Image (tube, rainbow, N blue to C red):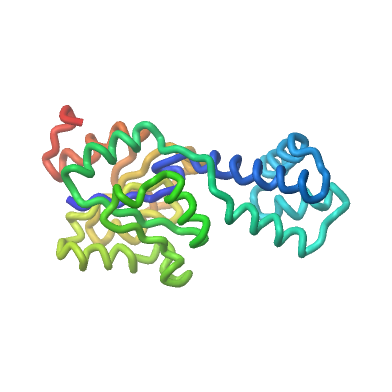
Length: 229
C-alpha cells in the first residue's frame, strides 16, 4: 500500500492559512499605510465571506480609497510569502505517525509553489514523507486531475495502481482521474468541500468524516485491522 495525501483541508484546516495570511496583510497595512489592523482583518474576512477569494485585496484597498495595481501586488506578495501560523489536524498527526512507520507516504498538492512550500515548512512535513509533489513545479498542466505526479509515484515504487491510495477533500478534481485506474480514493469531509455534492463519476470510492476513520476505508482492500489504529 502506498498512501498519498492531499494537503489543504486534508492534513490541516486551510481556513487557518487564510486567517494567518489576512493577519499578516492587515499588519502590513497598518505599518505601511496606517490602517488599523484589527479593522482590516474584519474587513478582509467580510469580503471573503460575501464575495470569495478572487478580489479580496482589490476590494479592501478600494474600500480604503487606495486601490492601485501596485498595492494589490504588494498585498498578494505579503500573503503568499508569509510564514503561516497553521497546525495539522490531530487526526492527521495520528495517521501520519501510525502509517508512516509502516508504509510509504507521499503528498500531491496543487497551488502556488512558494505558498505550498511555506505551508509544508510550517507543518514540518518534509521528514514525514518519502516525497512531496507540488504539482505546479511541473507546470500548470500537471495540476489535478492530471495523473502526472501520481504516475511518477507508481514508477518510483514499481507498484500497481491498485496499490495506490489517495486521500483528499475536493471532489471537483481529486478523484476523477484516479478512479478508472484502479486506485483507492478516499474523501475526507474536513474542509470547504465537505457539503459539496459531487458530479457523477467525480466522487471518491470511499468517504470518511476525518482521518481517524481512515482505517475503515483501507481495511477491505488491504486487510488492515482498524482496531490497531
